[in-house]
Image (cartoon, rainbow, N blue to C red; front, side, top):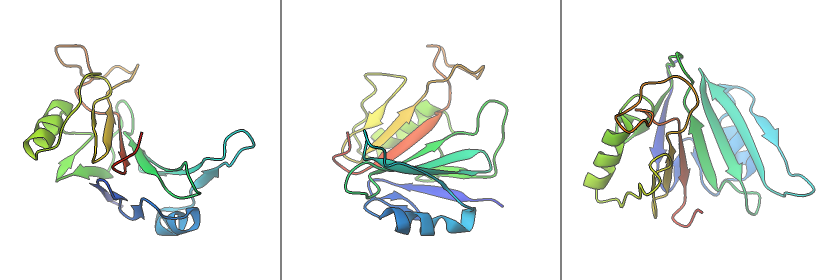
Length: 159
């Protein structure tokens, strides 16, 4: 089953919206299967749940007030192809070269902070990307993976 996960910064990743309770978020993804819920723990009151969609990891973080504070998505891994697409303004985050994603974000008027090229982010929206992996993947002339390996959507004040 092909699924398109549309990044909607700073509101979330449909059908999970920032600010939802755990119950609301789990219900929103129930058509995909049963997510695994973790926490709260005695030393850490935060919680999260994750579910896999044809190899793409989907994780909702509940770090304050038992409400969704961010959603993070993970690429399927080296050599794996997925029917699930993670879209930002029509571009698939895991199959479009990372540099193109960042160039298009800047063209939209978003401020791109690439001071750490392995973990660029767009403050204020909030989008945070990862290009880190120990796997054998295509790399650019600077040795960075050509494609992003994860993306996080948070609210305007997410840290």
